[in-house]
View 1 (cartoon, rainbow, N blue to C red):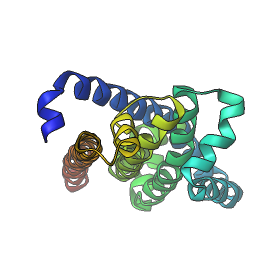
View 2: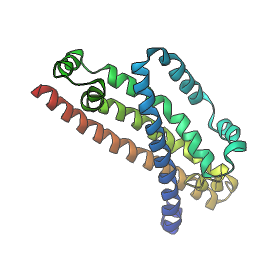
View 3: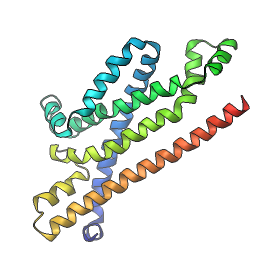
View 4: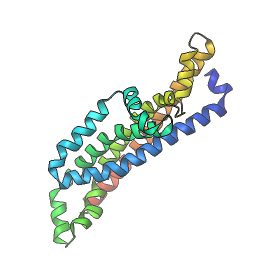
Length: 216
């Protein structure tokens, strides 16, 4: 805790960088993953290829993926953001498919009976009912991205990983240990905060969906 007490400005700046990396990555991954998941529910033959490729990407060690991307995206934030997007796709795509598949058939039949088009059913029925499950996927991806983003400091992306790597380089000194512990503590707290916040939002959405379903 000594480093946190003595260097609040630096810790806040690195935390801001870390949050930016994760937020941008998760936003891009959601904008890609949700449409991909919707496409899979419409074209079932894509299920195996899309889930399979995103699953393989998720298993690649982060250092290896960063190194593979670096010749194309350069040293810095772009490499880390692309890697985090690729890592996040599996949870978001899979949960989007599960959420839409979980919409009760009776609800879809009622929507068809009201004369809704396929696009209207998707936007007004399927996606709203699937949103809690989709958000659960975003939650998993976000928590994982907070941890993986610390490795990005080794590739010039900044963030809380800077404290961890600085601490490792000077681990033999008390100052190095303080930096290492400070970076790990703040990164863990950030992951827990994101997990709690998104879990609360998901529970709130489930209650709203339940009330709508009860009225139906």
